[in-house]
Length: 461
Image 1 (tube, helix red, strand yellow):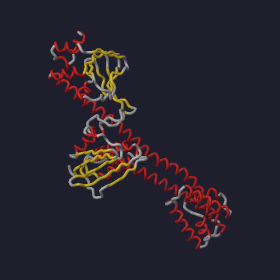
Image 2 (image 1 turned 180 degrees about the vertical axis):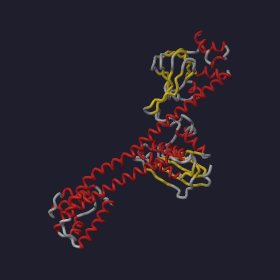
Image 3 (image 1 turned 135 degrees about the vertical axis):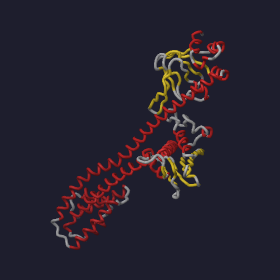
Image 4 (image 1 turned 30 degrees about the horizontal axis):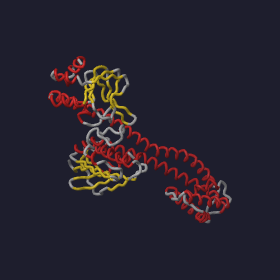
């Protein structure tokens, strides 16, 4: 007990405690020994004891998905584990020994009695807890920013990969199709078309180009049936490689009757060449259109990303809220598979004075939470309307809902309804702070099958 007394006397929390009270406390202290790597307490467990480190080093850490974030390393003379006792809440982080360690465990009732009877100890504890909360929040916010950056990067990479791959694939195929088309066109020089036939050829040129850009909407069975009929027709008219031309003609929306119609306008001897030319030219135009669409999509994503982070713009400016929501959806599109997103925007919504990139962080948090809530098979509705002087944004989902007893805690730092290790509990707290920075408000209404977050923002804060 004398050993316990000398250790606790060096700890600021207990230094001013009368010797008789400190001796009484030592009588209930328990000594704990840990080997390196051994766990002292785990995140989510109930806190019944605080600990004074006598020897060794204790690492305080938090697991987020597959990441482990070190919040602090505590050394001899420091008190740990007290926050869960003071808040009467599950532990918000885990602790394990970095080196062989010895700790003195103090029960909840003894610590509570000390704080109630010793004002100086209560003051020291308040200072310690406040400093640790700030430090932990700062570390987790930095970690969450890095995680958000990783998610943003992964989402953008996923979004860019599809159109880029399509453009590259189209370019490779176009190289082959273009060579084939040039060979066919050279053969056209051997055919002497009349003026009427040349005019018909020009009309056919325009028609094929239009069909290639606006392909026929056929299901697999319809396409297969037409393809078989075309192949049979082409073979019946002595056209070689009918198996190669038929699928391309079907993709352009041609059927045997239409092929018959334009064939009647040209010399019979030119029909095989015309059929091959239509298939080759239609393929080339389709590939050019596909490459153009890929480039357009990439440009759209880059534009959305630039608008999302408000590059090259002043921190505060006029913000189009609906545009911010749209850009956020582009960033999160890789997570929307299976989710029915419904947009109900007020077309008369005024622009607001705001920090655009910060508001987009709010939309990201709210929409991402809604996506998680519906688990890939529900409805997420984004709604905007104007109620002077407020612009109101609603993010609604058809998930399981939030229990009533948790609603009042949603915006507290470190509080999360997600499974342990899947959230820092800072997303909604950060959103709350951003909204209040804009002199706005955020409200939540929830029941099974419907959770709605309402963000109220003044047009001019």
